[in-house]
Image (cartoon, rainbow, N blue to C red; front, side, top):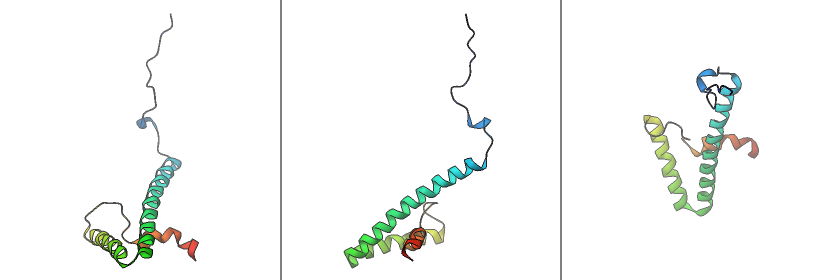
Length: 95
């Protein structure tokens, strides 16, 4: 009869040593999420600009609320404070 050694099914995070590639992977995912939401905000702004003054005013009131939250330190921690900041990664395409 063989003796079965009790081992964990998967490695635990405590046994891993942080490496540069692990940190870069996490940062890459975080920037991907930020770009995703920034792209949604940019598309919303572009649709509002093409729709008319009423839709544009709604987007501007939303982004001005984000700016007020950012200046007072309230609201979500991660956010794009303006449409221009959200569109910054795409400026190279339009130049």
